[in-house]
Length: 282
Image (tube, rainbow, N blue to C red; front, side):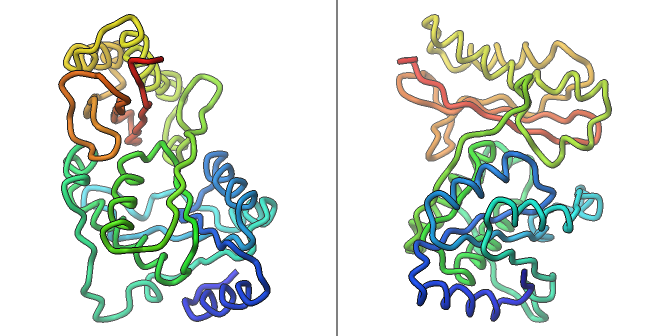
């Protein structure tokens, strides 16, 4: 484990000299669950040297969000990363990542404007900035992200292409609980009654998928199906239910190709997101 940029660069350079390639990066904010661990396993399977970063990035939180309450258990995370075969854990301080005088940010384009970008202004600016920094610090050949954060993955893919990062962006499947709830560090905020209703997000997505399979290609009607499903419980406050292009995140009117069904809702203290790639050919 290291907390300094210089040590990361030195250890990655040494790994390359030893022939431990490709180098893989798994960027995280910690408080690991099975979704994080699945990314580490994929990186371990495909890479000669695996770097896992653990850093709760302050600039991707807006003023209404409580950065201080974001769950963390670094000692547990370190043990889990080691058990999954991570070669290096990078756990920097805020001062290391954003030293005095820091004044440069990555401004993502239209792919960041809708969905969570609309609900959390500035969020993807913070995400793009920290990921660009991690790409420059580690210099990985491959970087691993989860499909649950589909818009984040799209923003990073666009950034990597536009800024000429020679990095293969790997997006791995969402890992779910037995009842369909997408695994998230924020699930720990749910009390029992709220946790019982949280799978409604996934049920809304599968309801849209099933309606598409029955021949309903009108995106407005699919959105209504998702909203109606989530609206079944007063504990779940729907933020959005959309059908969008999975690359551009632009809304679509009719589903004639693979699209992304995406939802976000607040349940108690937790803001939860989920999505599903659906296609008329399924």
